Amino acid sequence: MIEVKDLLSLVGKKLPKKRFLHSVSVASTAEFLSLRFSLPLYSGYTTGLFHDYYRYMDEEEALSLAKEMPFPVFREELESPLLLHGPIAAMNMERVIGSVPEEYMKAVRFHTLGSKDMGKLGAVLFIADYAEPLRTHLTSEERKELLSSDTLEEIVLRILRLQDSYFMSIGRKNAEVTEELKKFLESGGVFS
Image (cartoon, rainbow, N blue to C red; front, side):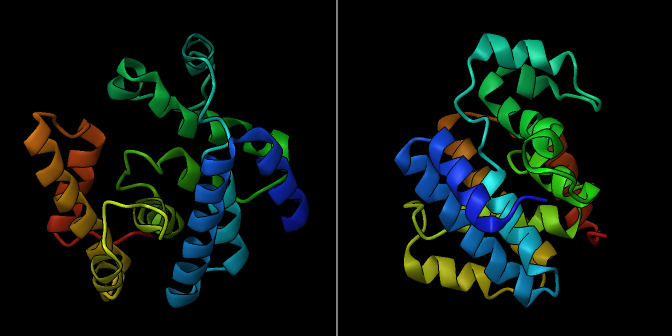
């Protein structure tokens, strides 16, 4: 697998500066969460750096690649091709950065919509992408309070409820997979 400094360079060359800084911030937040919840540090940092690698892909190309995916693509991803950057990154992760455990690819694949199948690392990345310090939708105090929750499941559920409130205010609905994740967590589900 690629060295961290080489991955930083690779991602820095691929992404615009603002998105690169977001990815570094997500990686640092994921590293913090990985340490807190006893996951390998490199896993959170690597997936955090790589998660938006394909964020600026042309929509037509993204839709074309969606047909080649080795896993299901959700209706909402096809309707909003920007969401395909996660699955495309997961599909190409090993080609770009070398051999990685399956949970890395699963985390990157589900970082936008979430899934009850995203695992602990996926939960870490989902949380880090939402709560990294450069995001302005949370105050420092709100972020600190959110991240102080006792479990990954509790943090993810709180994020989903915050998203629900926001989506309701703009007349939008969650993706089916996101609703399934919320129901899973509300019924006591635990990430494996």
